[in-house]
Image 1 (tube, rainbow, N blue to C red):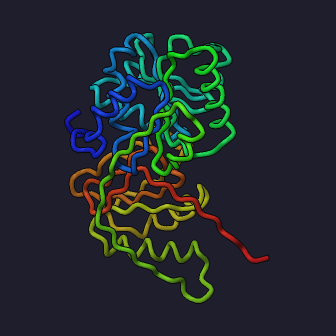
Image 2: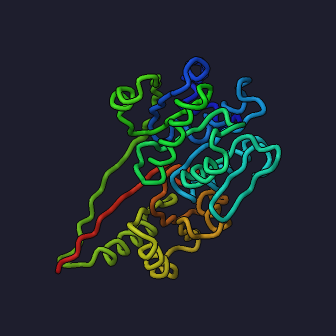
Image 3: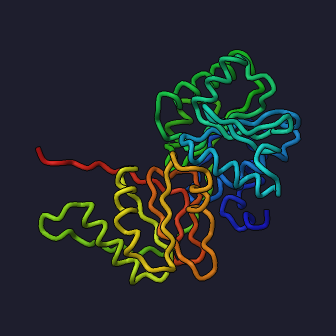
Length: 305
């Protein structure tokens, strides 16, 4: 786990552990890249109070569920399904030894339907809590109801990069807030305007082709939707240099395809990653100059009538 030692969240480890031991509801605000999704869950496994009990780590996206579970298991030098596992609607990889389960909010609701008191569970972690959805709101409401009415020992941890801590602690009077610093990187902004009435896809394609030829490192592109990723991928497939590996990334791809986009590039190779709605998944282009962690783009395209 030495690769995690330099993450900014390590600075608050002692404070966090003490706070979580003393309070049943904790709110953590940490910027993207601080390590709240990839480092902090491993701390939880070392809590004596959680020994022999389950920890549920909720993620709002299926893509994040699988890949975070794989990453955490790798830090323990284990396979997924041992200490760390995951559950999705149609796919489960856990065992009798699994203590940390990465799941979606909808899966937690199903678990509560079968286990109304969440017996055997010590902690429920809501990552990216600022994300509002029907499944997310329902899962939190049910968990909070269990904590307040049935299980005063059940702990809840809310994590987010953009959460309004003052507002949430005013709403949850028993919540204790903690803040972690992040890490800043130099960013260069460049705006390339489309030519006349050029369609945005054609413009995006032109910019990507240009960067593929001139930029020396890996390239990460955020696009509005899966259809756009497929269009761009097909269009650039034969127009990029041989050392640039084309890697689409979205939830419906196979795990192998997702991992190809997420893993570091091989020596002498670069990556062109075309992504959409990527949240708790870590994207690190280690061989290049572009490094992006837990980044999300939401775009709205307005078309003329």
